[in-house]
Length: 119
Image (cartoon, rainbow, N blue to C red; front, side):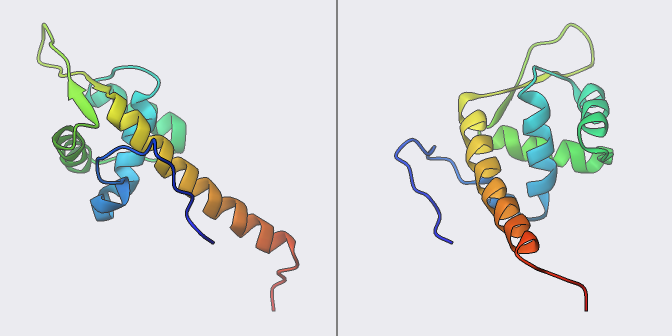
């Protein structure tokens, strides 16, 4: 299955470069696609969205990596909570990553429907 190439892909590294943090990165970017959130709000939204609870260390390590890549940015805050929002580069990287995951999911489902049976 060939990867589709487009000229609109961002220059930033794909989420796959995050290794074991690709899953949390996908969840965080997907949550922030719905609007800016601070850490606790991200945790609750991700639980609601995916049924996954990110441990604080995992959450904040992924936030630091995403911010370092320019996929998210911290917003000013009047209290100790630090909200983050998705950047244009983050939205583009998320779209590419989710499109690739959709291709894998669609192909896996197609193969299952084509006649897989337990032995």
